[in-house]
Length: 211
Ligand SMILES: [Fe+2]
Image 1 (cartoon, rainbow, N blue to C red):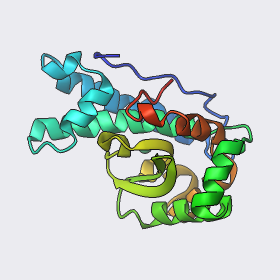
Image 2 (image 1 turned 45 degrees about the horizontal axis):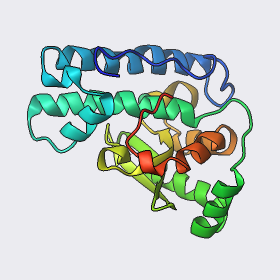
Image 3 (image 1 turned 45 degrees about the vertical axis):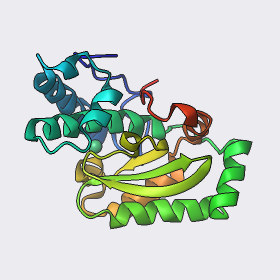
Image 4 (image 1 turned 90 degrees about the vertical axis):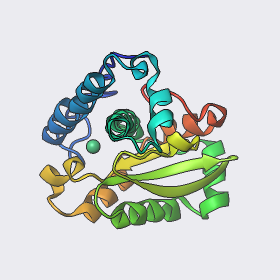
C-alpha cells in the first residue's frame, strides 16, 4: 500500500490485553501515538516521491539518510511499521511456539526461558526509547534492540517479535518500572503464532507488518 497511509486496525479489542496492558494504555498508545505517526508521515510525504512508495520501501530508502526531512520521514514511517508489528506480537489468548519455532529456540537459546531473559535484558538496557526484538537470519534466531524508530527490517533482517520500550508503552500501567512491564508482557502475552509465521517467511523479510 502506498500513501496516503492509514492506521491499520488493532488485531484485538482495546481491553483484550488486560491486566497486562490496560485499555487506557491502548487508547493513548494506538489512537493517539500510533495515529500521530501515520498522520505526520502523510503530511511529510505529500507531494514527494515517497507518497508513491510502499511503507517498507520508504523505511529502507530513508534509514540512513542525513537529510533532515528524510530523517523525519524515517522516524514516522519506522514508528508506523514497528507499532503494526508490536500489536501483532501480542496476543490476548495463550499461544506456544510451533514445533519448528520451538526447535529453533532450543538450538539457538537452549530454552524459551533463556530467550525471554535475553529479550527482557535487551529491553531493560535499551537506553531511552526503542524496541527489543526477536529476529532470524538464515533461520538462526537472535535477540537485538533498536533505538527510537529504527527497525531490523530496514536492513532486511527478518523480525519475529517485538516489544515497545518507549515510555508511552508502559507508563500509565507501570509508571517508570520498565523491567516489570517487560517481565509481565514476556510471560503472558507474546504471540508465538505470529513469531512462527514470521520465521517461515524469512525470504520476505521486508514485508507488511499488518497482515
Ligand atoms: Fe509505542
